[in-house]
Image 1 (cartoon, rainbow over the protein chains, first blue to last red):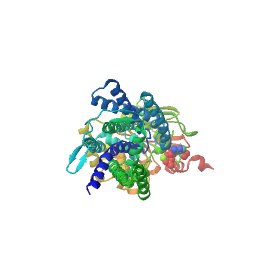
Image 2: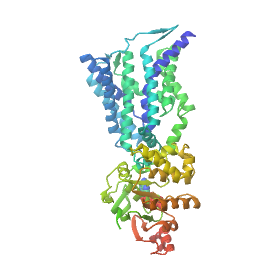
Image 3: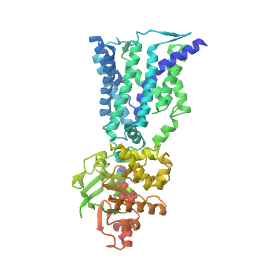
Image 4: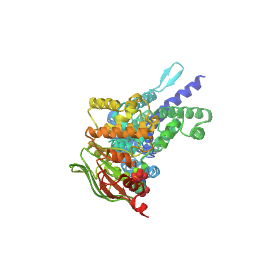
Length: 304
Length: 242
Ligand SMILES: Nc1ncnc2c1ncn2[C@@H]1O[C@H](COP(=O)(O)OP(=O)(O)OP(=O)(O)O)[C@@H](O)[C@H]1O
Ligand SMILES: [Mg+2]
């Protein structure tokens, strides 16, 4: 029993990093109904800028964190301007394809900055372990868990208690009606994109500081894990992002424990597949997505 | 008569197809101006062009002298123009109250916004009863009232309305037109698209007929026999002639 619980705890801890990544994805998907494949590579730009600074000058860790988040936001805004803004609202597939192209561009830019496969990254805790009775937890991951819960709470407040959130929700429901109500659709979407990238930047920083290293796989890893977690939890749903991230972590931990590390990712995809067949909208997202998709009016007016 | 809205030679196209082929008209300040015309005449296209949701290829749209063409829909709302769109387009998953708040999105006087919401509830008591209900669960007539109230929340100088009677029972239509007349008495300039020529001619001070992207007649109610107006508005002269 104790190993089982320990494995579950490990899964929850790793899962909180997936949940953080999925929050940013869910925000963009929830608002724009669009998939930003360059999400991970944008995080990578920020992380690499932070790493570059770290290995060149060794600044305090909080400076690395600020640079990582700011870099991710800058790259996110670049992606938005290039792939998502110019195409209007009706162009989901085109923006997804172009965000894939930008993925390659951002990865190349990162590798030009730092060409080796891996580099050291500053740790917040020194990587120590805490014992809680028979169980072992890593404070690094507790920080991540706390960050995930705090950010999802903040995001929920933002969406339901502020004017900006009201505008975003109006855009999700009907972008034409939103613009006719005086909501600046383009600016609001850009802000949402910057916010999602900032969440991704925080996620990236926390994950790397827990790993104490950054590798060239970061961009791919962040896009894949965030996307899968969001799909498991529910497309575009904030509680869904958390549930999906934690579920993905636990599934991975147990399948690694039972079948070994090679099977870990395979098991995650298998669960995703079965889940999408049974509940195409994810655990929490089914009705929300169907509603949002069905009633999204206004695309008729954005073609000229 | 001083003009609130002056539209000159506006051409708006969907791809290659010109839906407006050089429209000129004006709406007098403090009055109700009505635009009639058969299906597909371009009435909605004109409303969307004024509101900035469609960009005219050519021509000018002036609000008390200042040009609106080229401004974003949000800026046009900021200039004092609000459109009650065809088919209402309320935000279905938001409460009645949130829909009204969305209409006041650009306003910074939160105390006055709250007071205006109360005024809307006084004018539309059924919205008050349903203030926390999701807008998507309202009846068609209630949704139309909500769409009007949402537009008024921006405190417009010019209220544009695109077929407010669409799909509503006669008794509800009457209520809506009562509200239109009342708003106008309170000083709001109204530019109204309507299929129901009979009702439109009762409230309008001036009307235009539009067919196939062009204004074909302009006059005051009473200048043309009502059945003649109705014939043209529903059928169009070109089609009814043949
Ligand atoms: N998104 C669009 N793409 C292409 N053509 C369009 C589009 N919207 C409208 N049209 C065409 O433009 C013309 C004018 O349409 P519009 O909707 O402005 O007419 P309307 O006068 O409002 O009609 P109704 O009384 O039916 O509402 C029609 O021929 C219509 O088919
Ligand atoms: Mg129309």
